Length: 125
Image (cartoon, rainbow, N blue to C red; front, top):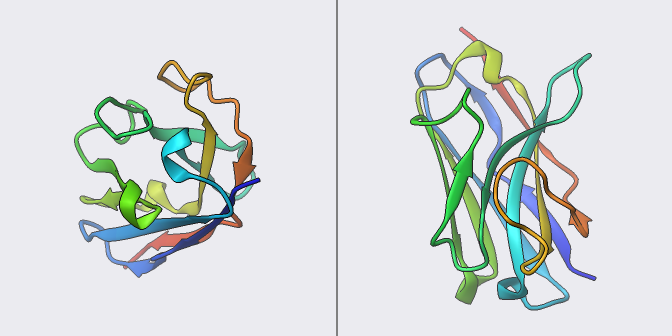
């Protein structure tokens, strides 16, 4: 089973940027599609972005489209989520997940095999 570790979260002012990383180990990263999700206090976890096994196709939640960018480097076993134009409502714990690449067809329906522990993103003055 693949193990995922996120990093890159932190405190940023509105309008700022962060880049989150998701490093995989224990299995071949390119065998999986990748997704990013977030959960704010008192709210359910929500889909943020997803990409296929090589990053050629990407999908985004409407709330982040045009501000966030998902990407991956299979040679480095790492996925990324670039967060630009951050807003206070983006404050949440962000987690990455992987799904076998033949089980993900795009969009928010993501049957995850593994999850990372999450990294906190706080957007505040």
